[in-house]
Length: 77
Image (spheres, rainbow, N blue to C red):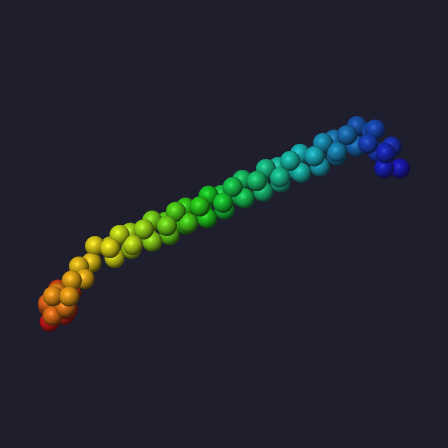
């Protein structure tokens, strides 16, 4: 019964429509998957950049013992 439907003109159009919908849905899924991966990569790059900036800023801190009693320039007065 189903195979005989495929050999009719209406059946061929129905099969083509189903195939077209399947291809479109696969394309949309692939585009969405790529967008999510791109956003995750951008977030990871930003986190790595922030971490590297924090490491660099921490390395630039003057930790000499004679500076222990200096005034804090960030203190509110």
